[in-house]
Image 1 (tube, rainbow, N blue to C red):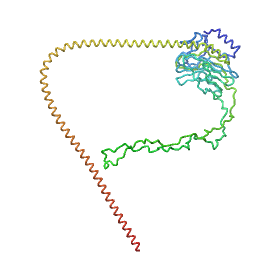
Image 2 (cartoon, rainbow, N blue to C red; image 1 turned 90 degrees about the vertical axis):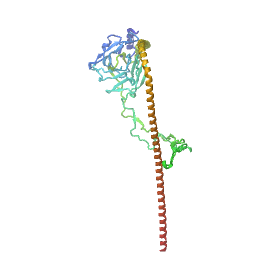
Image 3 (cartoon, rainbow, N blue to C red; image 1 turned 90 degrees about the horizontal axis):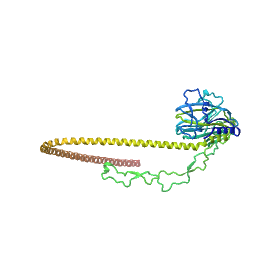
Image 4 (cartoon, helix red, strand yellow; image 1 turned 45 degrees about the vertical axis):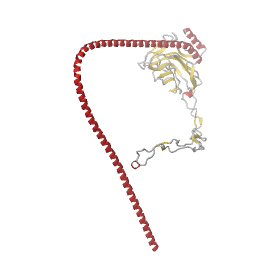
Length: 511
């Protein structure tokens, strides 16, 4: 358990050994929440309270600021111990977040606001210097915001840093260095780092494409692949036809060439067909890639000493959450990363293992409870089924007793009816025999009639088929006769024309 003396000693050490602390809040003081002033810009704010949560690792250290109402906006701000202008200094904001409620949609980020803020008017449109922290909504919309204000415009980091979405406490650190570089850490592990101007596109590029450069006339920018000029089609390559006559097909026995025409075998896929042949593709030896103009120094680029310089006077909580329960704790704003690391160790890292153990025990207890409830419901279900089964068996037994009684009463009635039935049986059998004989005679007449009709239909169909075949043959014969007569007429005309030509030749010779 952390004692208040330890915190006091750490603060005193910070003032002498480390850099300056501009804001530090562990919420161990019951009056610490009073520093967070609610906005008057809206009346539907959710309430905040001090809480260690439903489960925790330490009675004192686990206490933090908790958002306590579902589906609400929260807009609260607290003043720094002293204003912080970060020019020429490192800047660190660090805090812990515990999504105790198994978050589905809700932000857990802080806004660092200018000294000119009016807390009573604080809302989502208020100007801020930095916004940092996790924001989760659903399984895909998740990121750690790292937004900096530059010349009045809010700029989000280009990279997406994934937050932690479990129910444990996690520490988030944003370190902006005086040399214009940065680090984003989660649980003391660096998630992203680099130069400010490379991750926040707020300045013009240092280099740009030369506007006067032109692509050389002999530049080959495509295609990247060409056909191999040395590739040749194999001699046994079959590129057609795709289909061939089926060599195994046979002309049907009932095929009539005169009536059905010349028979042709059906077409099947050519088993030797390989498709259209194309030469293989190779890299174009002359390909140089897409041309781009060379880079030159951007005449419009100018370093800005005020890039990532912030003027901070307040820390603000401006979030929306669907399910309440998020706990903010151990908020620190300083210019010394070593102090931030030591502060994080004493307020968070030293309690990580204990928190994991507590959470594991709670999960196991919850699992045992759920299993006990499941078993109880299963036993209740089985007992209910057994009771219903016994009830059904009792009902069946009552029905059997009733049936025995009814059977006894019906025995006498059956005995009385048997004599009457015996005398009537003979008469009924005689009548039934007569009816059966008449019915058989009628069925025989119907069968003979149906057979005669079927024979007549088959004979008519055969006659129609013969007539059709005879008609086709007569038509074919008539067509052949006409073709013969036409051929003879043509032959005769040719002979007469030949005689006329000879007569003309004789006359010509005589002349």
